[in-house]
Length: 463
Image (cartoon, rainbow, N blue to C red):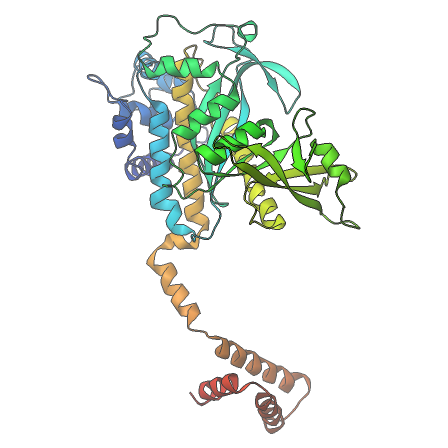
Protein backbone atom coordinates (compact mmCIF):
# COMPACT_ATOMS: atom_id res chain seq x y z
CA UNK A 1 0.00 0.00 0.00
CA UNK A 2 2.88 2.36 0.71
CA UNK A 3 4.09 1.78 -2.84
CA UNK A 4 0.73 2.72 -4.37
CA UNK A 5 0.11 5.84 -2.33
CA UNK A 6 2.29 8.92 -2.99
CA UNK A 7 5.00 9.78 -0.51
CA UNK A 8 3.78 12.18 2.18
CA UNK A 9 7.05 14.12 2.03
CA UNK A 10 6.57 14.69 -1.71
CA UNK A 11 2.97 15.79 -1.16
CA UNK A 12 4.00 18.35 1.46
CA UNK A 13 6.87 19.60 -0.71
CA UNK A 14 4.57 20.01 -3.71
CA UNK A 15 1.95 21.76 -1.60
CA UNK A 16 4.48 24.22 -0.21
CA UNK A 17 5.76 24.94 -3.72
CA UNK A 18 2.20 25.68 -4.92
CA UNK A 19 1.64 28.05 -2.02
CA UNK A 20 4.95 29.80 -2.71
CA UNK A 21 4.14 30.14 -6.42
CA UNK A 22 0.62 31.47 -5.81
CA UNK A 23 1.97 34.04 -3.37
CA UNK A 24 4.85 35.05 -5.65
CA UNK A 25 2.56 35.44 -8.69
CA UNK A 26 0.05 37.48 -6.64
CA UNK A 27 -2.78 35.27 -7.87
CA UNK A 28 -5.05 36.37 -5.02
CA UNK A 29 -4.64 40.01 -6.03
CA UNK A 30 -5.41 39.36 -9.70
CA UNK A 31 -8.43 37.21 -8.82
CA UNK A 32 -9.83 40.11 -6.81
CA UNK A 33 -9.15 42.61 -9.62
CA UNK A 34 -11.02 40.34 -12.08
CA UNK A 35 -14.09 40.26 -9.81
CA UNK A 36 -13.41 36.60 -8.93
CA UNK A 37 -14.39 36.81 -5.29
CA UNK A 38 -17.06 35.47 -2.94
CA UNK A 39 -19.09 37.15 -0.22
CA UNK A 40 -19.33 34.07 2.00
CA UNK A 41 -18.08 30.50 2.33
CA UNK A 42 -14.73 29.31 1.08
CA UNK A 43 -12.62 32.00 -0.58
CA UNK A 44 -12.04 32.10 -4.33
CA UNK A 45 -8.30 31.76 -3.77
CA UNK A 46 -8.79 28.55 -1.76
CA UNK A 47 -11.04 27.02 -4.44
CA UNK A 48 -8.65 28.11 -7.18
CA UNK A 49 -5.71 26.51 -5.38
CA UNK A 50 -7.69 23.31 -4.79
CA UNK A 51 -8.59 22.90 -8.50
CA UNK A 52 -5.10 24.00 -9.54
CA UNK A 53 -3.44 21.18 -7.57
CA UNK A 54 -5.70 18.32 -8.75
CA UNK A 55 -3.66 17.32 -11.78
CA UNK A 56 -0.45 17.09 -9.76
CA UNK A 57 -2.10 14.58 -7.42
CA UNK A 58 -3.04 12.29 -10.32
CA UNK A 59 -6.76 12.39 -9.47
CA UNK A 60 -9.90 14.04 -10.73
CA UNK A 61 -12.36 15.93 -8.53
CA UNK A 62 -14.48 12.88 -7.71
CA UNK A 63 -11.58 10.65 -6.66
CA UNK A 64 -10.00 13.44 -4.61
CA UNK A 65 -13.17 14.08 -2.62
CA UNK A 66 -13.83 10.35 -2.16
CA UNK A 67 -10.32 9.66 -0.84
CA UNK A 68 -10.77 12.04 2.09
CA UNK A 69 -7.00 12.67 2.20
CA UNK A 70 -7.31 16.46 1.91
CA UNK A 71 -8.11 18.46 5.01
CA UNK A 72 -10.89 21.06 4.71
CA UNK A 73 -11.71 19.88 1.18
CA UNK A 74 -14.60 21.78 -0.45
CA UNK A 75 -17.81 20.10 -1.50
CA UNK A 76 -18.49 19.27 -5.11
CA UNK A 77 -21.27 21.87 -5.26
CA UNK A 78 -18.91 24.60 -4.01
CA UNK A 79 -16.41 23.79 -6.76
CA UNK A 80 -19.01 23.80 -9.53
CA UNK A 81 -20.62 27.01 -8.28
CA UNK A 82 -17.17 28.60 -8.42
CA UNK A 83 -16.64 27.45 -12.01
CA UNK A 84 -20.12 28.34 -13.28
CA UNK A 85 -20.25 32.02 -12.27
CA UNK A 86 -20.83 34.19 -15.40
CA UNK A 87 -19.69 37.38 -13.62
CA UNK A 88 -16.07 36.25 -13.20
CA UNK A 89 -13.74 37.91 -15.71
CA UNK A 90 -11.25 35.08 -16.32
CA UNK A 91 -9.71 36.75 -19.36
CA UNK A 92 -8.79 39.86 -17.38
CA UNK A 93 -7.26 37.62 -14.72
CA UNK A 94 -5.09 35.68 -17.20
CA UNK A 95 -3.89 38.79 -19.05
CA UNK A 96 -3.00 40.58 -15.82
CA UNK A 97 -1.19 37.55 -14.38
CA UNK A 98 0.84 36.80 -17.51
CA UNK A 99 1.73 40.45 -18.10
CA UNK A 100 2.93 40.82 -14.50
CA UNK A 101 5.14 37.71 -14.71
CA UNK A 102 6.55 38.77 -18.08
CA UNK A 103 7.51 42.22 -16.81
CA UNK A 104 8.92 41.11 -13.46
CA UNK A 105 10.50 37.74 -14.24
CA UNK A 106 11.18 37.29 -17.97
CA UNK A 107 12.03 40.71 -19.40
CA UNK A 108 15.01 41.20 -17.03
CA UNK A 109 16.50 37.92 -18.30
CA UNK A 110 16.82 38.94 -21.96
CA UNK A 111 18.54 41.81 -23.74
CA UNK A 112 16.53 44.55 -25.40
CA UNK A 113 17.84 43.51 -28.82
CA UNK A 114 16.29 40.04 -28.52
CA UNK A 115 13.12 39.57 -30.56
CA UNK A 116 10.01 39.19 -28.40
CA UNK A 117 6.84 38.22 -30.23
CA UNK A 118 3.13 37.59 -29.87
CA UNK A 119 1.96 34.26 -31.31
CA UNK A 120 -1.60 33.58 -32.45
CA UNK A 121 -2.90 30.12 -33.29
CA UNK A 122 -5.88 27.86 -32.75
CA UNK A 123 -6.26 24.23 -31.72
CA UNK A 124 -9.16 21.86 -31.30
CA UNK A 125 -10.86 21.59 -27.90
CA UNK A 126 -12.45 18.17 -28.19
CA UNK A 127 -15.65 17.14 -26.40
CA UNK A 128 -16.42 14.33 -28.83
CA UNK A 129 -18.44 12.25 -26.35
CA UNK A 130 -20.62 15.13 -25.16
CA UNK A 131 -24.14 16.02 -26.24
CA UNK A 132 -25.45 18.77 -23.98
CA UNK A 133 -22.45 21.09 -23.62
CA UNK A 134 -23.38 24.71 -24.16
CA UNK A 135 -22.40 26.03 -27.64
CA UNK A 136 -20.99 22.61 -28.62
CA UNK A 137 -20.40 22.63 -32.38
CA UNK A 138 -19.02 20.68 -35.31
CA UNK A 139 -15.42 21.76 -35.88
CA UNK A 140 -12.71 20.67 -38.29
CA UNK A 141 -9.47 19.23 -36.94
CA UNK A 142 -6.68 20.26 -39.33
CA UNK A 143 -4.20 17.70 -37.96
CA UNK A 144 -6.42 14.69 -38.67
CA UNK A 145 -8.53 16.31 -41.43
CA UNK A 146 -11.70 15.16 -39.67
CA UNK A 147 -14.72 16.78 -38.07
CA UNK A 148 -15.42 16.39 -34.36
CA UNK A 149 -17.56 17.81 -31.55
CA UNK A 150 -15.99 20.59 -29.56
CA UNK A 151 -14.57 24.08 -29.97
CA UNK A 152 -11.67 25.88 -31.61
CA UNK A 153 -9.39 27.25 -28.91
CA UNK A 154 -7.98 30.49 -30.32
CA UNK A 155 -4.94 31.44 -28.20
CA UNK A 156 -2.69 34.49 -28.05
CA UNK A 157 0.68 34.07 -26.31
CA UNK A 158 4.01 35.78 -25.65
CA UNK A 159 7.49 34.38 -26.32
CA UNK A 160 11.10 35.51 -26.14
CA UNK A 161 12.38 32.36 -27.85
CA UNK A 162 13.06 30.63 -24.53
CA UNK A 163 9.72 30.73 -22.69
CA UNK A 164 6.13 30.82 -23.94
CA UNK A 165 3.33 32.25 -21.78
CA UNK A 166 -0.37 32.31 -22.81
CA UNK A 167 -2.02 35.73 -22.56
CA UNK A 168 -5.63 35.27 -23.68
CA UNK A 169 -7.87 32.74 -25.41
CA UNK A 170 -11.39 32.18 -26.72
CA UNK A 171 -13.30 28.92 -27.12
CA UNK A 172 -14.93 29.40 -30.51
CA UNK A 173 -18.13 27.67 -31.51
CA UNK A 174 -19.39 27.82 -35.09
CA UNK A 175 -20.71 31.05 -36.58
CA UNK A 176 -23.28 28.95 -38.49
CA UNK A 177 -26.33 27.83 -36.55
CA UNK A 178 -26.62 24.55 -38.45
CA UNK A 179 -23.18 23.47 -37.14
CA UNK A 180 -24.05 24.08 -33.47
CA UNK A 181 -25.41 21.18 -31.43
CA UNK A 182 -26.42 23.43 -28.53
CA UNK A 183 -27.36 27.10 -28.32
CA UNK A 184 -26.23 29.50 -25.55
CA UNK A 185 -28.12 29.66 -22.28
CA UNK A 186 -30.85 32.28 -22.69
CA UNK A 187 -31.13 32.87 -18.93
CA UNK A 188 -27.67 34.49 -18.68
CA UNK A 189 -27.78 38.17 -17.72
CA UNK A 190 -26.77 40.19 -20.79
CA UNK A 191 -24.78 42.59 -18.61
CA UNK A 192 -22.31 39.91 -17.49
CA UNK A 193 -18.92 38.96 -18.89
CA UNK A 194 -20.22 35.45 -19.53
CA UNK A 195 -22.83 36.73 -21.99
CA UNK A 196 -20.21 38.71 -23.92
CA UNK A 197 -17.95 35.65 -24.12
CA UNK A 198 -20.83 33.61 -25.53
CA UNK A 199 -21.49 36.21 -28.23
CA UNK A 200 -17.77 36.27 -29.07
CA UNK A 201 -17.73 32.47 -29.40
CA UNK A 202 -20.10 32.68 -32.38
CA UNK A 203 -17.87 35.07 -34.34
CA UNK A 204 -15.25 34.16 -36.90
CA UNK A 205 -11.68 33.62 -35.72
CA UNK A 206 -10.40 36.55 -37.84
CA UNK A 207 -12.75 38.84 -35.88
CA UNK A 208 -12.08 37.31 -32.46
CA UNK A 209 -8.31 37.69 -32.82
CA UNK A 210 -8.73 41.47 -32.58
CA UNK A 211 -10.76 41.08 -29.37
CA UNK A 212 -7.78 39.23 -27.91
CA UNK A 213 -5.33 41.88 -29.12
CA UNK A 214 -7.50 44.61 -27.56
CA UNK A 215 -6.92 43.04 -24.13
CA UNK A 216 -3.11 43.12 -24.42
CA UNK A 217 -0.79 46.11 -24.30
CA UNK A 218 2.12 45.09 -26.58
CA UNK A 219 4.36 47.96 -25.50
CA UNK A 220 4.24 47.06 -21.80
CA UNK A 221 5.53 43.56 -22.59
CA UNK A 222 8.06 44.86 -25.17
CA UNK A 223 6.54 43.23 -28.24
CA UNK A 224 6.82 44.52 -31.80
CA UNK A 225 5.88 41.49 -33.95
CA UNK A 226 2.85 39.22 -34.29
CA UNK A 227 3.25 35.69 -35.67
CA UNK A 228 0.50 33.50 -37.12
CA UNK A 229 0.11 30.80 -39.75
CA UNK A 230 -1.58 30.88 -43.13
CA UNK A 231 -5.12 30.47 -41.72
CA UNK A 232 -5.12 34.16 -40.70
CA UNK A 233 -2.85 35.52 -43.46
CA UNK A 234 -5.34 37.74 -45.30
CA UNK A 235 -4.33 41.22 -46.54
CA UNK A 236 -7.18 42.87 -44.60
CA UNK A 237 -6.01 41.24 -41.35
CA UNK A 238 -2.33 42.08 -41.93
CA UNK A 239 -3.03 45.73 -42.73
CA UNK A 240 -5.30 46.13 -39.70
CA UNK A 241 -2.69 44.70 -37.33
CA UNK A 242 -0.05 46.99 -38.81
CA UNK A 243 -2.07 50.22 -38.67
CA UNK A 244 -4.35 49.75 -35.64
CA UNK A 245 -1.97 47.95 -33.27
CA UNK A 246 1.37 49.16 -34.71
CA UNK A 247 2.72 45.62 -34.78
CA UNK A 248 4.79 44.07 -37.53
CA UNK A 249 3.50 40.78 -38.93
CA UNK A 250 5.48 37.67 -39.83
CA UNK A 251 3.27 34.89 -41.16
CA UNK A 252 3.07 31.93 -43.49
CA UNK A 253 1.19 32.39 -46.77
CA UNK A 254 -0.88 30.02 -48.86
CA UNK A 255 -1.71 30.34 -52.54
CA UNK A 256 -5.28 31.66 -52.74
CA UNK A 257 -6.83 32.50 -56.09
CA UNK A 258 -8.59 35.63 -54.77
CA UNK A 259 -5.58 37.20 -53.01
CA UNK A 260 -3.30 39.29 -55.22
CA UNK A 261 0.04 41.05 -54.67
CA UNK A 262 1.30 44.03 -56.68
CA UNK A 263 4.69 43.61 -58.35
CA UNK A 264 6.05 45.89 -61.11
CA UNK A 265 2.60 47.41 -61.59
CA UNK A 266 0.82 44.08 -62.12
CA UNK A 267 -1.34 41.87 -59.92
CA UNK A 268 -0.22 38.30 -59.20
CA UNK A 269 -1.39 35.47 -57.01
CA UNK A 270 1.26 33.85 -54.84
CA UNK A 271 1.78 30.97 -57.27
CA UNK A 272 2.07 33.31 -60.26
CA UNK A 273 4.51 35.51 -58.37
CA UNK A 274 6.77 32.55 -57.62
CA UNK A 275 6.88 31.52 -61.30
CA UNK A 276 8.09 34.91 -62.57
CA UNK A 277 10.83 35.37 -59.95
CA UNK A 278 14.41 34.32 -60.54
CA UNK A 279 15.41 31.45 -58.24
CA UNK A 280 18.77 30.77 -56.62
CA UNK A 281 20.72 27.89 -58.09
CA UNK A 282 21.52 24.57 -56.51
CA UNK A 283 20.04 23.36 -53.26
CA UNK A 284 19.66 26.78 -51.65
CA UNK A 285 17.19 26.80 -48.77
CA UNK A 286 16.05 30.35 -49.58
CA UNK A 287 14.85 30.26 -53.20
CA UNK A 288 13.91 33.91 -53.72
CA UNK A 289 12.56 37.04 -52.04
CA UNK A 290 10.68 40.07 -53.30
CA UNK A 291 9.04 43.27 -52.01
CA UNK A 292 5.42 43.59 -53.16
CA UNK A 293 2.44 45.83 -52.52
CA UNK A 294 -0.42 44.65 -50.33
CA UNK A 295 -2.81 47.50 -51.12
CA UNK A 296 -3.82 50.60 -49.17
CA UNK A 297 -4.41 50.66 -45.43
CA UNK A 298 -7.15 52.50 -43.53
CA UNK A 299 -5.22 55.77 -43.83
CA UNK A 300 -4.83 55.44 -47.61
CA UNK A 301 -1.12 54.60 -47.47
CA UNK A 302 0.44 51.88 -49.63
CA UNK A 303 1.57 48.87 -47.60
CA UNK A 304 4.80 47.21 -48.75
CA UNK A 305 5.71 43.71 -47.54
CA UNK A 306 8.53 41.27 -48.15
CA UNK A 307 7.74 37.72 -49.31
CA UNK A 308 10.41 35.06 -48.91
CA UNK A 309 10.16 31.75 -50.76
CA UNK A 310 11.93 28.85 -49.03
CA UNK A 311 12.35 25.22 -49.99
CA UNK A 312 9.96 22.76 -48.35
CA UNK A 313 12.25 20.21 -46.70
CA UNK A 314 9.47 17.60 -46.66
CA UNK A 315 8.75 17.99 -50.37
CA UNK A 316 11.86 18.96 -52.30
CA UNK A 317 9.99 20.23 -55.37
CA UNK A 318 7.59 22.36 -53.36
CA UNK A 319 8.06 25.73 -51.70
CA UNK A 320 6.79 27.71 -48.72
CA UNK A 321 6.22 31.46 -48.55
CA UNK A 322 6.76 33.68 -45.48
CA UNK A 323 5.58 37.31 -45.32
CA UNK A 324 7.12 40.10 -43.26
CA UNK A 325 5.89 43.67 -42.96
CA UNK A 326 9.29 44.74 -41.58
CA UNK A 327 11.37 45.38 -44.70
CA UNK A 328 14.55 46.03 -42.69
CA UNK A 329 14.86 42.41 -41.54
CA UNK A 330 17.09 40.08 -43.52
CA UNK A 331 15.71 36.91 -45.04
CA UNK A 332 17.45 34.71 -42.45
CA UNK A 333 16.15 36.87 -39.58
CA UNK A 334 12.56 36.63 -40.82
CA UNK A 335 12.79 32.84 -40.98
CA UNK A 336 14.39 32.69 -37.53
CA UNK A 337 11.63 34.85 -36.01
CA UNK A 338 8.90 32.78 -37.62
CA UNK A 339 10.48 29.67 -36.11
CA UNK A 340 9.38 30.92 -32.67
CA UNK A 341 5.78 30.10 -33.65
CA UNK A 342 6.47 26.41 -33.00
CA UNK A 343 6.43 27.10 -29.25
CA UNK A 344 2.65 27.46 -29.21
CA UNK A 345 2.32 24.01 -30.79
CA UNK A 346 4.38 22.58 -27.91
CA UNK A 347 2.12 24.47 -25.51
CA UNK A 348 -1.00 22.85 -26.99
CA UNK A 349 0.60 19.40 -26.73
CA UNK A 350 1.50 19.83 -23.05
CA UNK A 351 -1.87 21.13 -21.84
CA UNK A 352 -3.78 18.41 -23.69
CA UNK A 353 -1.53 15.45 -22.89
CA UNK A 354 -0.34 16.29 -19.36
CA UNK A 355 -2.48 19.04 -17.79
CA UNK A 356 -5.92 17.49 -18.37
CA UNK A 357 -7.44 20.11 -20.65
CA UNK A 358 -11.09 19.17 -21.36
CA UNK A 359 -10.68 15.91 -19.36
CA UNK A 360 -10.74 16.86 -15.69
CA UNK A 361 -14.37 18.04 -15.40
CA UNK A 362 -17.52 17.03 -17.26
CA UNK A 363 -18.91 20.55 -17.37
CA UNK A 364 -21.86 21.57 -19.50
CA UNK A 365 -21.75 25.30 -18.81
CA UNK A 366 -19.70 27.54 -21.11
CA UNK A 367 -18.56 29.56 -18.09
CA UNK A 368 -17.12 26.42 -16.48
CA UNK A 369 -15.21 25.58 -19.68
CA UNK A 370 -13.65 29.06 -19.68
CA UNK A 371 -12.78 28.90 -15.97
CA UNK A 372 -11.18 25.45 -16.11
CA UNK A 373 -9.21 26.27 -19.28
CA UNK A 374 -7.83 29.37 -17.56
CA UNK A 375 -6.71 27.30 -14.56
CA UNK A 376 -5.00 24.82 -16.91
CA UNK A 377 -3.17 27.73 -18.56
CA UNK A 378 -1.98 28.93 -15.14
CA UNK A 379 -0.61 25.44 -14.44
CA UNK A 380 1.42 25.67 -17.64
CA UNK A 381 2.69 29.13 -16.67
CA UNK A 382 4.01 27.74 -13.38
CA UNK A 383 5.80 24.89 -15.16
CA UNK A 384 7.22 27.18 -17.86
CA UNK A 385 8.65 29.61 -15.30
CA UNK A 386 10.04 26.73 -13.24
CA UNK A 387 11.79 25.32 -16.31
CA UNK A 388 13.21 28.76 -17.12
CA UNK A 389 14.60 29.17 -13.60
CA UNK A 390 16.23 25.75 -13.77
CA UNK A 391 17.93 26.33 -17.14
CA UNK A 392 18.67 30.07 -17.31
CA UNK A 393 21.78 31.04 -15.27
CA UNK A 394 20.62 34.66 -15.10
CA UNK A 395 17.97 33.59 -12.59
CA UNK A 396 20.79 33.07 -10.08
CA UNK A 397 20.72 36.82 -9.53
CA UNK A 398 23.87 38.48 -8.19
CA UNK A 399 25.90 35.27 -8.53
CA UNK A 400 25.42 35.38 -12.31
CA UNK A 401 26.69 38.94 -12.58
CA UNK A 402 29.72 38.14 -10.41
CA UNK A 403 30.53 35.28 -12.79
CA UNK A 404 30.15 37.67 -15.74
CA UNK A 405 32.58 40.13 -14.11
CA UNK A 406 35.07 37.34 -13.56
CA UNK A 407 34.85 36.27 -17.18
CA UNK A 408 35.12 39.86 -18.37
CA UNK A 409 38.44 40.22 -16.54
CA UNK A 410 40.04 37.79 -19.02
CA UNK A 411 40.78 40.29 -21.74
CA UNK A 412 41.80 39.56 -25.29
CA UNK A 413 45.50 39.91 -24.47
CA UNK A 414 45.19 37.44 -21.61
CA UNK A 415 43.44 34.95 -23.85
CA UNK A 416 46.29 35.16 -26.39
CA UNK A 417 48.82 34.75 -23.58
CA UNK A 418 47.04 31.64 -22.32
CA UNK A 419 47.03 30.17 -25.84
CA UNK A 420 50.78 30.87 -26.20
CA UNK A 421 51.50 29.14 -22.88
CA UNK A 422 49.46 26.13 -23.97
CA UNK A 423 51.29 26.12 -27.30
CA UNK A 424 54.67 26.22 -25.55
CA UNK A 425 53.70 23.33 -23.30
CA UNK A 426 52.61 21.29 -26.31
CA UNK A 427 55.90 21.95 -28.17
CA UNK A 428 57.85 20.85 -25.12
CA UNK A 429 55.99 17.54 -24.94
CA UNK A 430 55.65 16.74 -28.63
CA UNK A 431 58.92 18.00 -30.09
CA UNK A 432 61.14 17.72 -26.97
CA UNK A 433 62.41 21.28 -27.39
CA UNK A 434 64.33 22.99 -24.61
CA UNK A 435 62.86 25.94 -22.75
CA UNK A 436 65.40 28.29 -24.36
CA UNK A 437 64.39 27.19 -27.87
CA UNK A 438 60.69 27.58 -27.08
CA UNK A 439 61.25 31.03 -25.55
CA UNK A 440 63.21 32.16 -28.62
CA UNK A 441 60.36 31.01 -30.84
CA UNK A 442 57.75 32.84 -28.74
CA UNK A 443 59.84 36.04 -28.64
CA UNK A 444 60.09 35.97 -32.43
CA UNK A 445 56.31 35.44 -32.65
CA UNK A 446 55.57 38.38 -30.34
CA UNK A 447 57.85 40.67 -32.34
CA UNK A 448 55.64 40.10 -35.41
CA UNK A 449 52.45 41.19 -33.60
CA UNK A 450 50.98 44.74 -33.78
CA UNK A 451 52.48 47.19 -31.32
CA UNK A 452 49.34 47.63 -29.15
CA UNK A 453 49.00 43.88 -28.67
CA UNK A 454 52.73 43.38 -28.16
CA UNK A 455 52.78 45.94 -25.34
CA UNK A 456 49.77 44.30 -23.66
CA UNK A 457 51.37 40.84 -23.81
CA UNK A 458 54.66 42.09 -22.42
CA UNK A 459 52.86 43.78 -19.48
CA UNK A 460 50.89 40.63 -18.74
CA UNK A 461 54.04 38.49 -18.94
CA UNK A 462 55.89 40.75 -16.49
CA UNK A 463 52.92 40.76 -14.11
